[in-house]
Length: 196
Image (cartoon, rainbow, N blue to C red; front, top):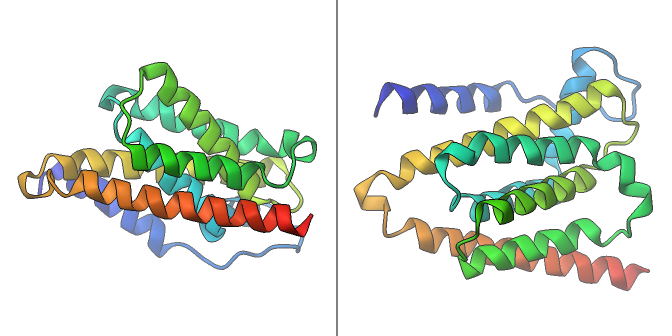
């Protein structure tokens, strides 16, 4: 394992070790508010599905675009609360279903299309995180969680794709994850439409 890969994986492991329970509904301030926003992203199944769906599609993008794609998704996730009241409840699950279907198809997209996917995935992740009382600190937590997880997963995929033994398995794994994400998004969309 290269020092670069070791550094990336150790950072991801440290982030996972310092996770703590979500302190929702308690008027948090300071670092607790940042943790609250981050953990809303990391503890909500639909928000995680948006992250995994984004990864299944964005792994086809060129490595030089990974940081910009992660940044676009994180900014959109952080600002999703601004338009959440204007969108129907099935918006996030529908976007997640579309992300999964694109992942199953394993389509090669242009650079601009990858940015559209990143923006939509960030929007779905931010809407699904459903931060109760958004403040600047909780929104910063959503942003930090989204960019660090998405960037880490995309870079880790680049490292895994360079392993000779995994090269044949990774496209199949991406399609399986895409089908899981599509099924989850379609199921949640149907539940939201049925409830209304």
